[in-house]
Structures are given as C-alpha cells and as structure tokens.
Length: 422
Ligand SMILES: Nc1nc2c(c(=O)[nH]1)N[C@H]1C(S)=C(S)[C@@H](COP(=O)(O)OP(=O)(O)OC[C@H]3O[C@@H](n4cnc5c(N)ncnc54)[C@H](O)[C@@H]3O)O[C@H]1N2
Ligand code: MOO
Ligand SMILES: [Mg+2]
Image (tube, rainbow, N blue to C red; front, side):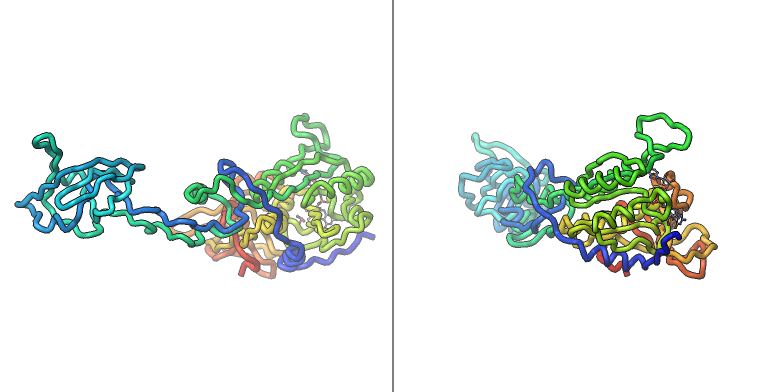
C-alpha cells in the first residue's frame, strides 16, 4: 500500500520551518568585499556629515554683511587674500571686504557666512593685489553646505540585517568601516538524487537527463545570500544516499536534497529520514508545484527534501529555504516580497491546491501586470529563466480571469517581507 500523505496549508508549512529559524554567526570582512553581504550590526553615524561647513561651489567665501550695498548699478569690491581647494583650510582671517577664493568641498573660513559663485564675480588685479567685485546681495548662509545637513552624529542609517548595496558601501566608507561586521554566509549543502542524472559535461543517452537542479539551487542559494556546497549527485540507492546524506549533515548549516521524496519505489528520502531519526515536519503541502516538498529536522538542523521536478524544486526553495537563510543573516524581512498585479491571462481551471505560477511581471499603462513565464507544470525547466515572480493563485473551486488582481511574490527584490504575507 502506498503511504497516504495529508497535505498541510502553505502557511502552516512555513510556520513549522520558521520555528527552527535562528540568527547566524558573524564575521569581519574587508569593506571591498562587502557588496551583497548582510550587515550584522546597525550602521550608525559617528560624526556629522558633512563634518564641517563647506562650499558647494567654486567661488569666493565672504561675509554677507559686506554685500549690503551691492546691486546691479553698484559693484562691491573685495580683496582676495587667499585661495583654498578642497582638503585645505584657510590660514588667514577674513576681514571686512575681504574674500577667500574657495573651491567646491573646501571648509568655510570661520569669519565667512556665504559663498558667491565664480560666474557671478569679476576678477582683476591692481598694484599686485587680487580683487573681485560683485553686484548682488548675499544673505547669511547663502551657498553653504552645512555641517550635519546630510546626517547627524548618532543617527542609525542602516539597520542590522540589511543587504549591503552600493549606497551602504558608501556609508560604510564615510564612517570609517574598513572592516565590516556581516553575517557569515550560512553553508548550504546540495545533493541531487536520481539514477537518471548525468553530469553537465556528459552527452545524452537514452533515459537519462542532465542534472539541472543542482545548478539552479546553487544560484538560488547565492541569491539568498548563502554559500552553496555542491556535494554531487547520487544514484537512487538507499545505502549510498543514506551514508552520503548522514556525512553531509555534519558539514553544513542546511542540507538540501533534490528528488526522491515522492512515493515511488526509488524515492528513498522518507526512509532515510526515518533511519537517521530525523523528525519529519511535513511531507505534503497544499501547493502546486512542490506538493511533495518534505522537510525534516535533525538535531535542530533543517534537511530540505525538495522535489526532483525542476519547477517544484525552485518554488520549494524560495518559499521554505530562503527565509531560513535570510533569518540566519539577521534580515528582518526574510520572505519574498508580496505585491498585487493585474493578471494578463485566464486560468479557468480551478485547482484544489494553491498555485505558485512562475511568472514575469511588467509595467503596462502605469500598472503592474503578471503573466506566466512558461508552461505551468511541475516538471518544466524552461519557465524558470524568465521568472522574476511567483503568481499566487489560492486553491479552491474557482478559476481566475484576465484583469483580476492577484498576489505576486517578487523573486529579484531585496526588500523582502515579514510573515504572514497578508
Ligand atoms: N503516485 C504518485 N506519483 C507522484 C506524485 C504523487 O503524489 N503520487 N507526486 C508527483 C509530484 S507532484 C512530483 S513533484 C514528483 C516528485 O518526485 P520526487 O521529488 O520524488 O522526484 P524524482 O521522482 O526523483 O524526480 C521527479 C522528476 O524530476 C526529475 N529530476 C530529478 N532530479 C533532477 C535534477 N537534479 N535535475 C533535473 N531534473 C531532475 C526526474 O528525472 C523526474 O522526472 O512526483 C510525482 N509523482
Ligand atoms: O509536488 Mo509536485 O511539484 O506538486 O508538482
Ligand atoms: Mg520520485
């Protein structure tokens, strides 16, 4: 008799897994290598930015009070007593009707409270001294980039768990982080099971196919922020698989296998979990594809038995493995971000299970539309390359029509989402 499995709702499966989610270890890495990593502490401003009042223009720093009488018919003359570029500080004190020629980014001389752009002045020399004149009034504070106007000391600028983007790199450099505390990348072991699997370099022979899941999963692991460790492929042989999996568990934070989780004669994962003494959290979910996704925990370590069918495997990873990885990286929004979009096609046939259709979103007439990125079948691989989203069509008695608003989970977004999605 084939074992009867009872499907649990997707949200229940996510909850069961998230019970084992924890934050991971941290490490210090050079700033140059931090792009794409996850901050493991808040990034706090330890000084004002800019740290001093500075000139935003190439021009002259003056005392605004000296321009009181300036107008189109009355040029006011200033003696230019010094010149400073960015990085230099004025040595001279600026008195009445004196100016310092100042370049963009240079610190304001203490006595000056305004800058006039070079283009608005006339420069000349007399008796070996330099002068400039201008014909307009300036107010105190005109054309100054003030200390702290960008941010002030003490502000938390980026929160722990945020993925480091180029802007975060800029801030880390601004505040002197030559080493950055980030989440250590969790290690995710990958084993593909299946006697039918060929290595990528091998030519096709009857009955066999190339192992594509391992490379797909590797990329998904990297996209999620973790370190893939590819252990290879295993033939459908109980003892071989058992020994290999048992050994692999020791070496990684998370172990993924693909294939062998259904009810077929050579689907050995259920028995392997049993022999290991691992607790199976679930082995059937009310979703399509990926209904056979099986997750077990062994001494607190999660073993993900993803389906062998490529689309099912892909979806299983994004819904269940990704949030575990992101939580290990301290990310507060570990789940895929959900938005709503306008459905571009009909799905007339109802399905009892919630569908996660590999889809692509696009912008049309100022709205987000969503359309399947290929054939909507569990064993399909070609729909994955164009997928930037998963359309969520809840199971039930009705189909879906073009024009309806549907939920969509974004695959390439970095903001993420908390659970539950709603
Ligand atoms: N009697 C039943 N049969 C099946 C059921 C069921 O409920 N009752 N569920 C079906 C569903 S749904 C799925 S999904 C699959 C899941 O099968 P497994 O996870 O056990 O995976 P395999 O049987 O090992 O392989 C399935 C399919 O995927 C191909 N595959 C496997 N590994 C790879 C890989 N690394 N790269 C590319 N393709 C791979 C494999 O050749 C098979 O075609 O079970 C259904 N059956
Ligand atoms: O588990 Mo299967 O992926 O539902 O298609
Ligand atoms: Mg099978």
